[in-house]
Image 1 (cartoon, rainbow, N blue to C red):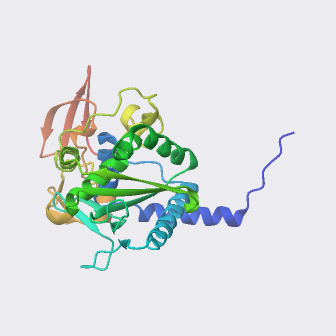
Image 2 (tube, one colour):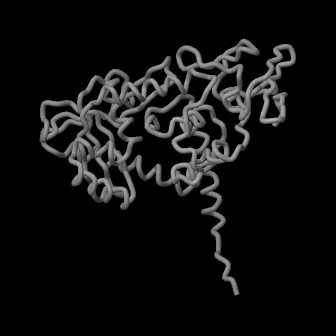
Image 3 (tube, one colour):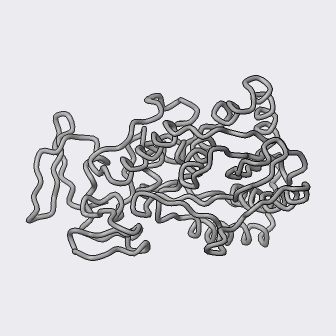
Amino acid sequence: MVELKFIDPTLAAADAALEERENARRARNYLGMSSAGDCGRKQAYRHSMVGADPFSALTLKNFADGHRTEDLIIERLRMAPGVTVMAEDPDTGRQFEVEDHNRHFLGHLDGEIFGLHQAPKTPHVLEIKCVKEKGFNEFKKIKDKVGEKNTLREWNETYYAQHQLYMLYRGRTRGYMVVASAGGRDWASCRTEFNREAAEFYVERARQIIFERDRLPDRISENVHFWKCRWCEFSAVCHDGAAPARNCRTCVWGLPVEDGKWHCRFHDRELDFDAQRKGCDQQRYRPAFVAGDVVAINDTDNTISYRRGDEEWTDHGEA
């Protein structure tokens, strides 16, 4: 006999409300520097809002735990004699923000730290990451193996890219990352040197993702079973041929313009973020999102025709 598990309807309702609220809040109107080290194709899909599975309540709770741990780590760092942590930009009173590419490429620092005992005269960009026990142990193992200055690049390219970009835009030569276990019960750190070549690579790739509308970056792997592809929220679109969401970011008429804004060339108007996500009945896919070669563009009917092998398909805007 199968035993049925009891599901608490109150907790289930709270989880559902959390998912609805936080998934809406987490939508970004920009390409985030915190993801600059991810697969370029994945970044392009996220920036174009092609459609991804929403975060589960459990994942969202993990995010919240991480944010609370960051505050705790900053509080503890400030207890060290001679150490100063600036978690807010004194010019704005808000979190440090850096930007590029007409404000379509943004990053938000955990802070800057001064007076590190191992380098008291050198200001450092500060980043804090709360990770699971496996990731924490792996970080310490890699640090012992390759040395402190090479640890971050070896351990996590996404965090490495984020660190390099923050150093670039803040004009710093060193970064300091604190890696904490769940709840901040254990912690470790590494210092990373600024690498201009690496930083400029991520800046250029971001420019391509944002402004080169006729192509997408290469996949990290052509093998759908590669672990990063298998667990990617965009695997269905990237590898399985699922249709991207129809919105202004996937539309041939939508263009990023100055000051982080978007413009529709068909309707000749500025698009706010809600309009971008919603799209309209005149949406036609950017050819980069269609598996096929463009054979005809009809501006009068607003259609684009493609050849896929021996077949021809015309985008009329249908789902």
